[in-house]
Image (cartoon, rainbow, N blue to C red; front, side, top):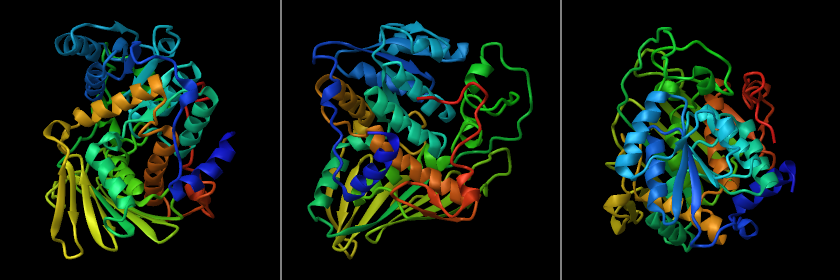
Length: 439
């Protein structure tokens, strides 16, 4: 199936809730054969992925990759102390994908690298675990799907709540009618991030390959408030809080409602809390309307930690006969009057706090286990790229709406924005010459 055909049939099938994502044709290992991983981007979330891989039986980390020597040396110590050995090191990802002793590449880099790396890896014959968001712009979503279809390799996105026992139970019970007909999902994220200041141009640290760090992004001078974390808030490299964290809960709402591509998106937001170099939005509300009278709303507050329902993040699914609150710790079932009817607890080992930027826990291990099982035995992936990229695309719509007209009409069959040339200018980014992804 070519990309255009997939986009038309895939969106319709997802909206109908009937897609199945088994890949029995690409089984390459028995249950006892070892899977060799490379982890790219080995600070923070990369550490968490290394721990998760180590927790899955018969999986090894043969290579690590980063462009910062300081981070590499810190990770070597972490890996030795936490896992018991030090993998081989390659700083240049383009060389890494050519290594023969790698089956899977796990990507936890800055977001502008996610899709180009995933595409390059699949086209080089590697399975891919890519952290959310899977893309920096909607065009990359299309390219990811095309690369997966062309290569036949597995690609799972790191929206690990899809591997939560209680979330899966809740989705099953919602499908069985426990809250009647579900029609509205409320998603939120609250944190107390501080200011990032006004950056000053300084010499590139001798330990950092700034050219490789920028990779597919147009070249900019090095500043002192970008690396290693604040790139999230710059449009050249990051995609803002709606992608950084909203992806998770928007994905849960979409899963619970059984919807795919919306036909209308409205969003507003701004940098309201601090005045500094932060280019995306620390405060944002995005609303999505779907065929069949279903809606999702996301509210993000990066710098004000006031919670909803006593939680810094979560999703509330409303139906005609009740509501279910879903987060990483479990779920709560309420009747129409707000009375608690039932509670399911995920377990303390799987819970992560709002402020934890690393996010290691049982859900990440579960998600990695599912990925390894899919490689070995062909079980369905919990977050295959064909489905996971839809949740990422919703976040792109939200950002594009704020940056343009505030309201977008979308054709669910093509995923494109309708009658809005200004918005469609943001469908694809400008790439550094020679770095544009190819399939």
